[in-house]
Amino acid sequence: MATGQQARMSYVFVSGYTVLAVAFGLVPTLYALYLSVMRDGRFVGVDNFVRVVGDFRFLPAVQHVALFVAIWLTCLLAFVVVLALVVHSIGQRWLSSSIRFIYYIPGALAGASSVVLWLFLLDPTVSPVSAVLHLFGLETFVQTVSPGNLPVIFAIIAFWTGAGGWIVVMYGALNNIPREVMEAARIDGAGPIRTARHIQLPMMRKWISYMAIMSLAAGTQLFVEPRVLSQASKGVVPIDYSLNQLAYLYAFKQNDNNGSAAIAVLLLVVSLALSMFFVIKGGLFERD
Image (cartoon, rainbow, N blue to C red):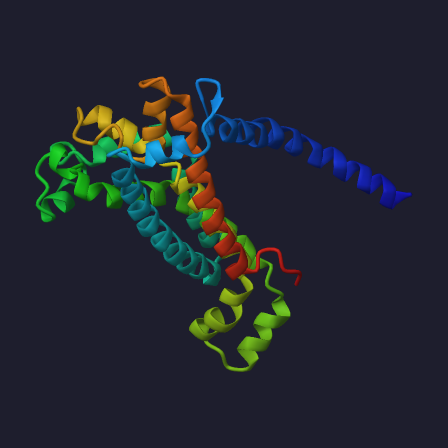
């Protein structure tokens, strides 16, 4: 009886997410698929895909997003895991909790507001870290946000905004490792580095894979940061820097919803393919 009641309650809890996922995930995806193969009310097959791929702005946008995602994911996976291990190893509970809280604060800022804050930090004439910018030969805001620096700048902003939340998640994953396993490692003489390498990292594999998938999905949707910087720099950052910006231009400047949908579908296919790689490598759906 209790089992049946628990099952019904489970369906109630899941139903809210399911409704929202269908309304704002599945239905828009199917509509984008439909638009991507239509034009002027006629079925055109892959013509829209050929057209957007042939656009001179498409390949640069792909390169920008790919470089940003590569830098960001590499830094995120490496530093978040290391910082989570360091925080978890701190014996003083109050100190560990305080550090996690400090890490999490930047994540409380919305994307646009964090970019506005970074506009201030990236201007060498007013920035509190102007000395650091001067060390890299950056004397003006325009020099700082030049296209060659943007992948690193966007990666730093994304890391600053998102890393804290993931450190808290990884800390929770470390707490799930059975105490007996950690005690056995200590009795066998394993130090912190060997314990992390042979015990903690393998047992965090699914969580790291989950972080990679979610961060990849967010990274390929790069939009707010280059758009705000483009407006602030008066065009130094191009308005078609990322694929999402290009899709925006197609939909709202060129009145070409079919081309915009084609870009969205291409992004979806690439993101799903890369996500499957992390799912398989990370054993995300394997049973323990």
